Length: 389
Image (cartoon, rainbow, N blue to C red; front, side, top):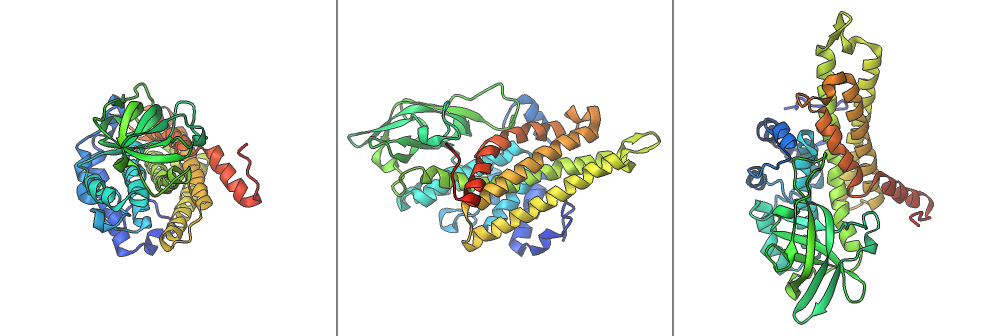
């Protein structure tokens, strides 16, 4: 059965039965469980905690990780489709799922011991536990290698000191995957548990984007981390950057979901809004905007599925993910602006989803690597010359 959604080239025809099932299940869930209350949560700046066990029950968290750890064991394309449909609802809700799966569960799976995997992954997959990821600092975003957070070796483990910033899920997290420099100045990953003495996670308020999700600081003041909470299988920036690559993949798919949402709203409004005796959709300038949006969304969908297939067959290169994130978030941002124009003054009203998506996508445009940083990743891949410094 074909979904009633934006798919000009019938790209879903190339999905497997399992991937189509994921799209249907996620679309139905978003329509029934998220859309009725999302404007209220966005306006109030609150997260709907009742969603978490439902995410777990439906297998959304860590969807592309092995079943052995309580996960769904689905393809990366299936995970991307889920992100697309989730962000068609709201970027903040998709961010929760992305952080849980790609930034909390993935590092434990990829860099942790088998004991750590069995201890934490099933609880994170079910939603019993919430996880977060601590890399960005107040003065170090695009240059994480300059981080100031330190893990000093002590008897039996480490003493952690420092601050992390802009952390999705931080205040509500049971565990935090935190990156810090050791005595040798090399970056290592640690599992910091809620309730450890000296660890606090105050929620960041007064934000005008991703308002339906929780954003926090992480503060560490002589927090003792036992040796068993060190992620043993990675050293250096390749650890956190490998996690971010997982997250960027989901973001590239999710952003097109946001673009689809504002496009669908714009088409509906253009057909219903009458000016000068006919629907505004009958005017050439409006049709030009809609045609541009549909074309760019379609190109973004094609890019997403090709990167997804590369990820599934093991041929993926990280600059391909940079292209996906860079292009598709830009497309979503431009589509939101055009949809706002088509809606006129109504575009700023909470009666329509446009301004919510427009405000959300401003965060997505920046996090997990800014547009400019991904431009430089592609530039280095093209020329062989890094331009970061």
